[in-house]
Image (cartoon, rainbow, N blue to C red; front, side, top):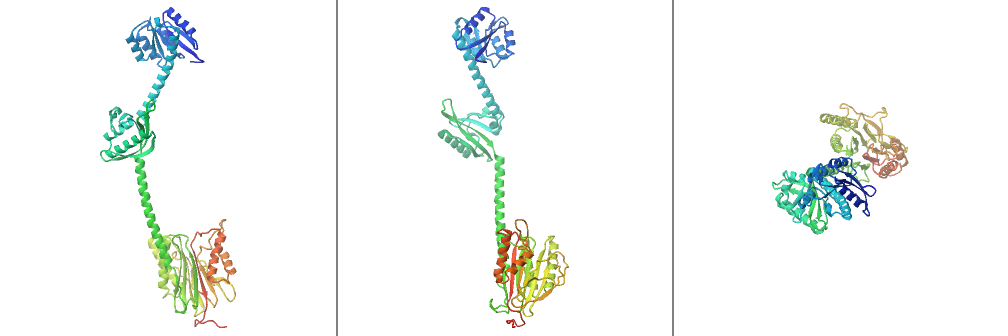
Length: 543
C-alpha cells in the first residue's frame, strides 16, 4: 500500500462480476482501493511480474485455467502477495484445500457484499504480513539452529529436550536433531552432571531468573570431561507462563585446558620464586654474616676504646645480595689489613665471587703481608677460575695494611676508587694513590698474569682513612649528573672534624640529597679507619 491506497488485481473473465467488484470497492468507506483487472490468468501473471500489487482477487473458473490450478500458478508467481479466491464454486473441500495451500480467504460470489469484500481484502493483507513475518522468523531461527556451532536447546518443564540445533546433535553424535527430542541430560551425561543441570533448570523455572555465562563441567559416561559456558533462560508461552527452559552452551574446553595449564605453570613459578626468594634471603644473611661485626684491636687484648686502630662502616646493598665486600684482618700484633672490593653485578654470582675473595684474603693475608703480592695472588686465582667457567666478570679492589709500629700505610689498588687520607696534622684530605704512576692496576680477573705494586705513605696519630666503593660516587641526580669523586672529597673536607662514624653517615645523606632518591641504584660500602696511636710501642705519641 502507498498513501493509504490498496492496489487490487482482479483476475476475472466475467465482465459483470468485474463491474460488481469495482462498484463495491468504490463504495467502500474508510479505505481507498485502486483496481486493476485481467480477464485471463496469463495477463494477471504478467501484471504480477511488475510488482506493486497489495492483494489479488482471483476467480477459479477462467478461460485459460480452471480450479486450483489458477491459484497455484498465481501463488507461485507472487508468493508474498495475499490471494483471496472469489468463485461460484460451492465446495467446502476445495475451499479447505485452497486455504491449506495459502489462500487468505474463499468468497462466494452470490454471497458477496461490499463490507464483506472490504473486510476480506483488509484481513488478507494483514494476515499475509503476519504469516510472512512468522515464516521469516522461522527461517532465521532455522538458519541459526542449523549453522551456529554452539549448542542450542529448548526443554519442557520436565527438562526433556523439545528441540535442539545441529550443533548439539553433533556434539552427542546424532545426525538428526529430532533423535534427541524427548531425552534428558540423564540419557547422555553422568549422573552427577545430569543432577546439577536439572537443579539449575528447576531454579530458573522457579525463580524466573536466568543463569548467564555459568561454567559447567560436563562428565560423559566414558569418564571424559568437557567444559561449556552456558546461559539458561526461562521458556514462556504466549500467556507468559513458564513452561520450560532454553539455553545456549559454548564449548570452552580448550580455554579451560589452557587456563589450568597456565594456573599450574603459575603455581610452579610461584613455588620456584618462593624458593629463589628463600635462597636469596639465605644468601643475603650469609653475606651479611661474612662482614666484620667485630674488628681487630691493637694491641691484642685492648678494649675497643683503647685500640690503636678503630673502624666504622656503612653497608647498603642495592638488591637482595650485593657485589660489594669489605674485610678487616689481623696481620700481626701491630698491623691490620683492610680489604674492600666491588664485584661486577648485584646478583648471586657477584655475591659468590665476594665470598670467594673474602676467603682468599683471610687465608693469604697471613703469609702475603705485602698488599701488591696479595692482590697479585688473588687476581691469578680469580682469573683462572673465570677462564675455566667461561664467565666474564671482574672486581675492583683495594688492599691496605696499616702498621702502627712503623707508622706506615702500605696499599695496592686494582682499578678501585682511591680511598681518602684525612691527615690530622695538616687538615688535608688526599687520595691514596701511587706517587709515581697515576694509573692503578687492572681490575681483578681480567689479566691473569698482572702484577700489582705496593705503595707506602706515613700515618700519624689522629689520621683517618675513608675507603668506599663506586656506588656512592656514581649516584645520579635527575639530570643524570653523577655525585662524583670531587664532590665526595669536598663533602669529606667540610665534615673533617666529625667523628668517623658520623662522617660516613653524613656522606650517605649528602649523596641521597644530591640524587633526590631514597634508594641507590648501586651497592654502597664505606669503611673508615681512625689512627689513635701510631708508634713503635703502640703507646700514645709524645710531642
